[in-house]
Image 1 (cartoon, rainbow, N blue to C red):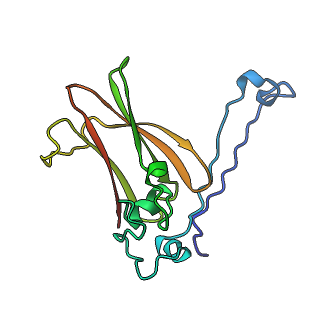
Image 2 (cartoon, one colour; image 1 turned 180 degrees about the vertical axis):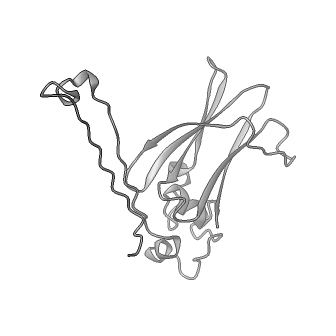
Image 3 (tube, one colour; image 1 turned 45 degrees about the horizontal axis):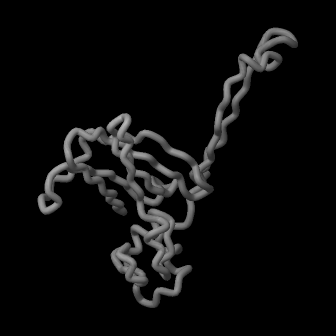
Length: 170
């Protein structure tokens, strides 16, 4: 039997008599079952676009500053300049002194061999001192069958804070 990557989960609840757990809504627990079905691998995805011979991960057919790996990883279209609509966004919560960085991630990233790493630094950008220290994945929201929105945060402990996202394919 070949593993198709899908998992089935069965939840049951038992109670005593008719007034058991199922008969008392206050005792219900909410469970969200999300079945992540592997999507299209990069090699198939890129063939769905008219990019000529520019099918390598590091090619940038539309010249929007995002290579095809970033387009694939964030949900972009390698034929059009869509950087403004899919690049990560950042915001500062001055009340809690936290810097948030929000980006899209493929829900099947592990299956596709993708890794997403958020890095930060508070020094001069001419220095290569990016680190993952202090970064927390604060929230994940499912957007659709293929993507989820991830919020990464880091405390602001100085005058400057920079964050970036690295997407790699193994």
